[in-house]
Image: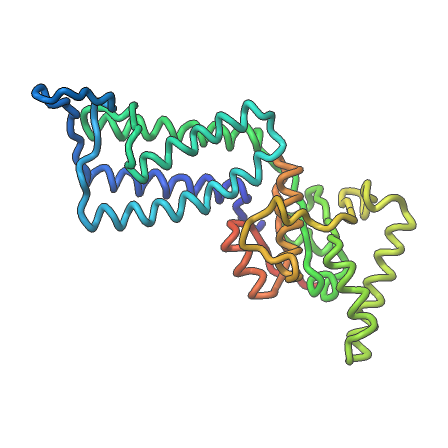
Length: 294
């Protein structure tokens, strides 16, 4: 049985990295107490404690933390789009607090007098994120959903072959509009007759499945396997910022991310042997598997 980490599990791992780097930064830091000048006619209202200016090693860790957290929090924005507005405000406040810990630009009213206590306070912030991820995913997700790219579907049109990954358990396979569009294009423009025959065979198979019921609702294949087809193109206004709507690989990955957002309790997995798509999936912390043998 293949071992694979879900999208949400990858985000938890990245959150652990953020916490570890902050602990390393705090180990190099010094906290000072703010005191007003008793001889001054001005009185400043500021947090009781603040971080002393850091050296180059601290600045380097801060820069790494800022980049990792900005990339990570983009995924949180993606996953929480459908939450109530009051919950979104809480998440936004939490994000702002973590940014203050990284940037140290002031306003850290919760900063305690010593580093050990500062570590505890920051760990509490991270705990809130962990609780959010647990709330989103629920307990023990076991609903596997495979999203094949076009070549995976052409090379292995028999979706029962996906049993190779996890054995005899129920799973779903989702065909995206990017794949159906590419199949329609390849059956006409590809120069190789044998390849066009394979593409047409896949299209015929999909139409055969459609004859069994509504693909948008899902049809049952071989008792425990469900096949679905998604008609809507992915929403590029609500996906990862670096994905390009004019790139087929990016469109497929955006569709997979959208499926994950709409099915938080499921483990969505790309199926592809395309090294470029695999690289993009890895950058997006999204799980993928090689195309199984026919």
